[in-house]
Amino acid sequence: MEHFIIDNREIFLRVVTALLAGGVIGFERERKGKPAGFVTNVLVCVGAASIAIIQSLIVRDTLIYDYPVKSDPARLIAQVVSGIGFLGAGAILHEKGSVKGITTAATIWVVAAIGIAFGMGYYLLGSIVTVTVYFSIMILKKIELYFLTNKVRRNFYIEYCNPSTFEEKLELFLINKAVRIRKLNRLEEFDRDDGSVRRSTVELIIPRYMDTSELTREISLLDEVSKFKRVGTPKTNQFE
Image (cartoon, rainbow, N blue to C red):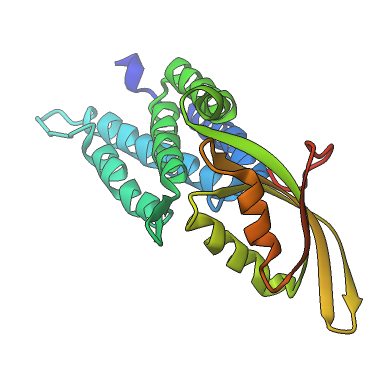
């Protein structure tokens, strides 16, 4: 019977731990510039925890009746698990044969599970999953890139005009060649007679079989590009 006693302090503790867990994961996603960042992950985690707390309170309240009252302790939680899929689906983008946002959608889903764990009072489970997820998005992605894929990273320096439209054009150009922009560091922007020019460094993820010199030549021939060359690893990066 004591297991179902939930006072205000317990409710506060469950909400705060869910907020912290969502914040830890959300901060890392925000730092990498992902669409579901700090605020989104906090809201998902706290929201799921709130639903779990409400379900626990409903179960607790039914125990005070002298006559039999049925209360399914998993009904509301089940709706969270299925409903969060719609939010995750909104983060997945299909574009020119490529799919983006699957990791973001999976993160949203598991953050909801963490919120449920804390909302139900399973602090150890919630903490373990939080640490595991944080480790996964921080470390396993790097392991996947270096050991489980046939891609390499290359850094380039680029000068280009019409930056507001060219960056999207460049991304689409690279997608068609199975190349992905991992980091873009905008160094400076200045005006010329023919328009604004931006200088940037860009880190590309390129298939191992691809001829880097040929890719460099093709990008250099784009109308907006005035200079494009390979460089070493930049010391600082604005976007990760």
